[in-house]
Image 1: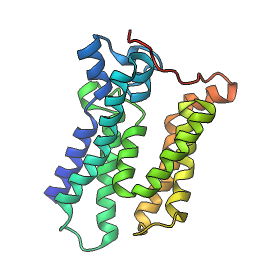
Image 2: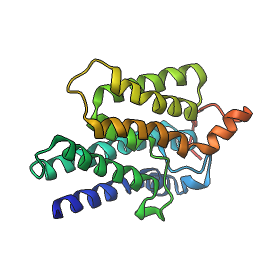
Image 3: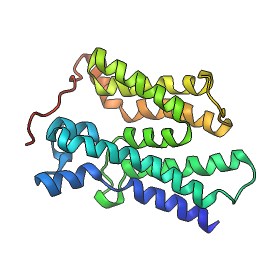
Length: 212
C-alpha cells in the first residue's frame, strides 16, 4: 500500500515540474503565463520564446508522463497478480502526472493543459495508438495549423486506434476505458478554444522568430 501511495505522489510531483514556467523565468525573465495564450505549456512557449525554449519544454513535458508510468511500473510490478489491477495502478500514476502538469504544486497550481504529459503517459501505456495520435495531430497541423483543433482531433480518434489498430498485446478494459476518457478530457480542457473555433477566431500556430 505504501508503494502505491509513493508512486502516485511521486507521479504528481514529477508532473508538477513547471517546465515552461521555469524556463521562461530563468532564461528569459518572464512568466510565460502572462503572455500569448497564458498557458504554461510547450505550444505557448514555442509561440512566445521560440524553438530554443519550446522544443526542450515539449520533450520534458512528454517525458514527465512517460517517466511517471515507468517508475510506477517498477515500484508496483509485484504487488498485484491481476493484470487489470496493474493497469489501474499505472493509469493512476499517469493521471497523477497529468494532473500535476495542469495543477502544479511548484507553480501556484497554474499549469498547462496536459496534452504533452498525456502523450507521454500514452506512449508508456500503449505506444502504437499513441504514435497514431501523433500522426493524426501532425496531419491536422499541416492542413489547418491550429494546435487546439489538432489536439482535440487526435484525442477524439485515440480510443478508436486503441480498439482497432492491429498491435499486440491488446490492452485490458481499464486501458480501453482510459482511452475514451482521453477523448473526453481533451475537449474539456479546450473549452475556450472550441468557442473560438466555432466563431472562427482561433489563431493559427506561429513560432516566435526571436523571444520577447
